[in-house]
Structures are given as C-alpha cells and as structure tokens.
Length: 225
Image (cartoon, rainbow, N blue to C red; front, side, top):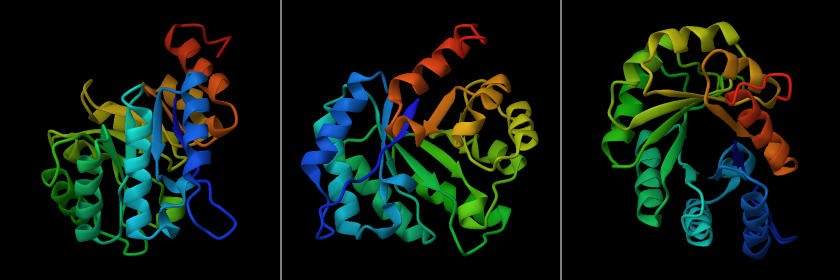
C-alpha cells in the first residue's frame, strides 16, 4: 500500500513542511510501503509549479530512501508533465505517477504520444494513472498494453471503477507490468484480478490496516484480508 499523502497547509495557504515531515514519519512507522507525494489528495492541482517541485524535493529528502517516493507529475500539457517529471527525477524520487491529461479529452493515440514523450524525457519508472471520473479521459486496456511496451512505463493506477476493464488489462499486459487499485473500496477485487496493491487515500488515516489487508491477501489469507 502506497499512500497518496496529503499536503498539509498553514492557515495562510503555505505548505506546512513541518507537519508533512511528521505525516511521512507516521506513515513509514505504520508499514506504508511507498510515499506518493503530490498526487490527487496532495493538492497537486492547486500548488504552483514551484510549490509542487519543492514539496516533492522535501519528501524525497525527508524519506531518505526508507521507502520508495513516487511523485505525481502529470498535467494536461505534455510540456508541463515533462518539466515536472524531470524536476522530480532531479529531486531524487524513485518513480513518477502521471495522470491522464484532464479536460483535453485526448484520443487513445494522443495518450500514447503524451505518455511516450514523458517517459522518454526521464530515466525513472512511470506509473500511469487512470481516473476518468476526474479527468474525463479513459486509458483503454489496449492502450495500456501498448504503453507497457515503453521500457520505463511499468504500472498503472486503475481508478476507473470498472473491474471488467481491470480484468482486460491484466489479460493483455505481461507479468512485468503491475496493476494498482486507485480506489480503496476495490482493493481486494483488483488484487483478485492480479493487482499488486493500492495507491491509497485511506492509508492517510489507516496506514497499518491498509498495508495489512494487501499483505494478508498476497500471502493467501483472503479471510483475514
């Protein structure tokens, strides 16, 4: 379970780095397997580029490689997604989580061009993030399979809510491509279709329980999960 960690703010709207550091330590102490910084829950859409990059840099520096740090670096502008992803790589993160271009409603061919451009601009892994309810744009299973051929596109966070789509992705991609649930109410169904875990909002308040749920399932104890 990776936590889509919140970005705490001060009353004046500035990022509260002291509290963010406390939250990160709390997560790691309670078995969270990865820190996902500046994801949807992390206010990515309301941070300035400078705040966004500084928050990513702070997280990478504070975690000190105790667990992987995954930075949300998506944008509906390909150039901006490339810029944020390159800055995240410079900050020392382990991977980037790249949401589909929102509002633009890209075609499937457009999605392939967008993600390939971002992937080719950095050397670290990329996790696709599919959340059509927020973006108005769905990555079709065949498109996921096509993007999985790009060497550093390694996983998808699937938050479409469509389990048939998750099953189709699992059937089309190879064993080296990972599927993560993007919805906390579908963790076990996604795991049952071959998923590897969850990028979780619930983990903000229940990190140990979310991690344990996934581990119980992966260890074969479905009843405990």
